Length: 168
Image 1 (cartoon, rainbow, N blue to C red):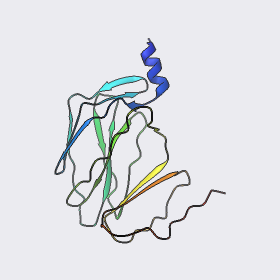
Image 2 (image 1 turned 90 degrees about the vertical axis):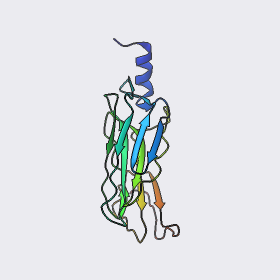
Image 3 (image 1 turned 90 degrees about the horizontal axis):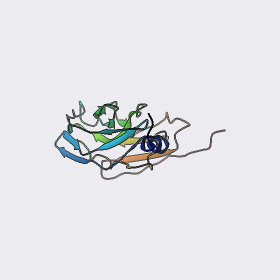
Image 4 (image 1 turned 45 degrees about the vertical axis):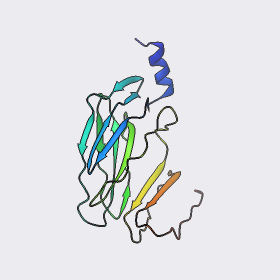
């Protein structure tokens, strides 16, 4: 049976209900105190999520992992593809994005701040690019991508030759 709360949750969509506690120690991550809604059902993280995140296999490589809430009161880390440029994995259907983390050969980056509430747009088209230094060529942007986040970790640098045009 559908209660008024469940109907309200279904209208508001999949989302995080609160900002969790995220603790990173070296390459270990612990996330606790989190609630989320998927398909009108509320989930409560129990017990806390803990994971040891493997570093990339060689210097100069970078990877982006995501952690999502699933329909089982648990979180799941989805490992991205390692390379010269990191692209976030796609958030699977019937999950809620909790955080994104850039991974290097000797460290992990600061997890992104979770987006709480209905501000989160699950189907937003964006690409998150991280580079550990050097020249990076991006040639496979999808025409549905609307937002770009480009991060540099070398301390110096810039973006050249970047242009956008409207689809025809």
